[in-house]
Length: 233
View 1 (spheres, one colour):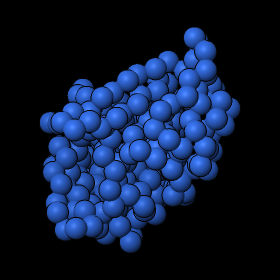
View 2: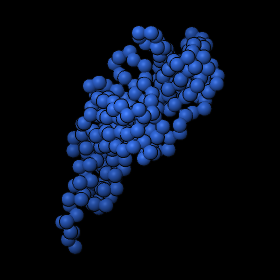
View 3: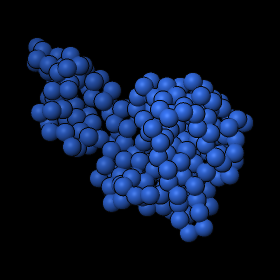
View 4: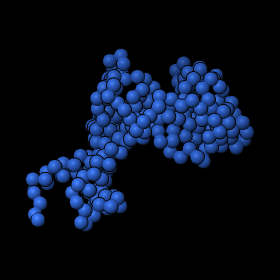
């Protein structure tokens, strides 16, 4: 039985929208990924569309709307300048790359991100921030929590691609990933220190941050932990 050719534009539209989320992929590579997921010779159009939608959920081509509509946590990667921007229902966290600047954290009203276009985010005061050209948008958590209570005894070897931002009482920020970076804002500059770590001996809200390194136990200056935010995975 012949199939209705009227279905073709809709299927191609699904392919286009998914490919726009990862334009760095060649079309052959995209089809290779689909093949690895079981879509190949003899697959029905419905199977292809289903897998395209799964890919698009992980790497959407756009992210836009008011904060009230946000349900998931995403990381938007930008260039010119290079930033990693975490967007979730609670806040924006901006991690500048290739420069000594501390992460920025603020509440927002509205986001407009399209792959290949400038990233625009309006903060709660109504100011629009231009944070570079969007390179990629990736889903990192479908049901994000506003914060984490503790990371006690987490080992560096187990953190993987996760990233946590820890806020201390004196306003210092600690970025915990495969390395640990401490940002202390001075009058006219930001002091950044980077450490290798083995285990978070104590990392809990209301407690001092104590880190075990190869050279011994370190207590990170800045007072007790105020907040722990999971910003990447």
